[in-house]
Each structure stands twice: as C-alpha cells, then as structure tokens.
Length: 73
Image (cartoon, rainbow, N blue to C red; front, side, top):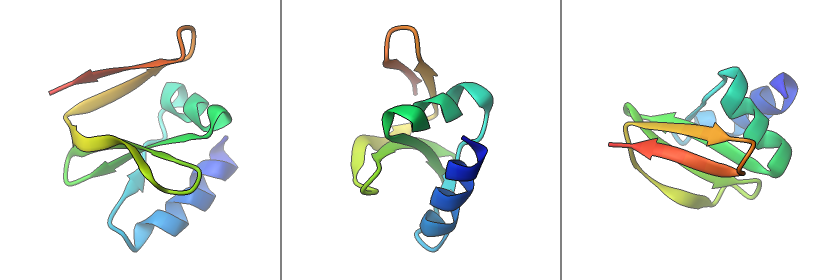
C-alpha cells in the first residue's frame, strides 16, 4: 500500500493534494479509493483521480470492516 500511496502522491502533487498515509486510510487503496488532503481539508478520490467525496471535511477515517467512511467537520 505504501507503494501505491507514493505513486498516487506523485500524480496528485501538482494539483496540490497530499495522499493521507496513516495505516487505516491506506487500506482504502486496496478498494480503489484514495484519501487526500489539501489546505487542511480531506476528500476521497477514485483510481481515475475523480472526486467521490468532496473536499469539505476536517477529517476522514476509512472503516474497513463496514467499507464506509467516518467524516467530521
């Protein structure tokens, strides 16, 4: 997962995004979701780098057990 995070991180750097690399959020990469951060706000992108959860949350946590996200403002 660290390799995928690095690859996506390089692709997203020019757009101002940083891939969130904590262990739990890296698990989302296995399902094709990329949790990113930009200007202290979080978002989720798919593998085509399209936004699936808008850049408007102060935190996003991937819950692998339920395949859901826990978000907060």
